[in-house]
Amino acid sequence: MVANWSQETYIKAYRFASEAHLGQLFPGTDLPYMIHVSFVCMEVMAALIVQKEMDGDLAIQCALLHDVIEDTKKCFEDIEESFGMQVATGVKALTKNKNMEKEKQLADSLIRIREQPYEIWMVKLADRISNLQPPPADWTKEEIRKYHADAREIHEALKDSNAYLAARLEEKITNYAGYFNRGTDG
Image (cartoon, rainbow, N blue to C red; front, top):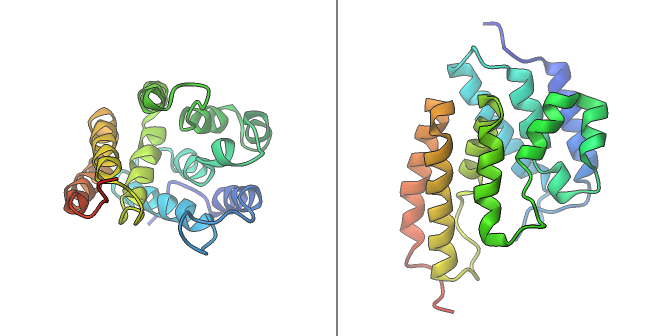
């Protein structure tokens, strides 16, 4: 079987992301933040096995780098210099615009993602799949319901990019509804 991505590209992006996220922890744990990045990339890699015509290098690089601009000191230009304009533009589309009101950030991001190739859409689907874990213990019922609604919005906007990831996200969304009664009333 011939992969539609290269190990060298994976290693370069993984190392860049690891250095950028060095010292960051996955929220609510003592685990390095790279565990989340790895989960997102694993979802994308599984989808690439099913949908071989995709640009695997683009999808994997963007999966590994998807939070670099948003959560580290690295900027668009750093990614462009190391990985090229297409990867940098994809990562930027996946980055929330923190200058906007929080309520408008997801819609804005989805608009920008939909202007990108399907490989970028896949990363956002994989990101939400990875994030639909049990919610933090201190989340209110309203926060849990909002996160669930946001996942549905992401699914609806991006499901046409990859049937495999769309089905995985739909399953995660359905399962996440089981947490509705767990949140606090606060």
